[in-house]
Length: 164
Image 1 (cartoon, one colour):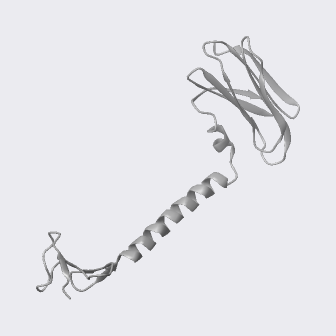
Image 2: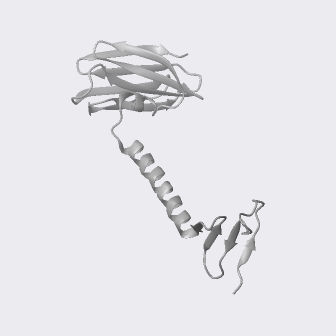
Image 3: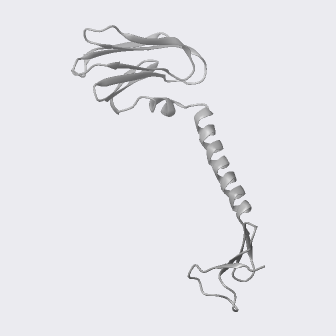
């Protein structure tokens, strides 16, 4: 049986073509007699995809920090509203306003809340016992003013009408 010779523009070594494809197999013979099994290539590619997928899943599942939670609000940070036991970070993007409350001391679960209200609308509230943050809470404000409220434990703040 003959072998199909594939010329890909690489000079031959010792009168051998650069690659030889054996009939009825998926094995390539490279210059110098080295074999390249396409099954091995597929296995390595599958392993690479599996590693990338696993690392992506671990990044999503790992416990979030305050910085990771802040990124759950899209847009640019327009205000940080501090108070005695924490702070509220306010973000704005395309008429939407988003807020997240962070405690000064992380770790133990504390009573926290965050509220955003567009002028003329009802407030959107997230409250409960949280370890890292309350929120994010998002409202469509358009060009209206908003009122932000936040609390951690006994400390709280209310912004009045802002971002008008």
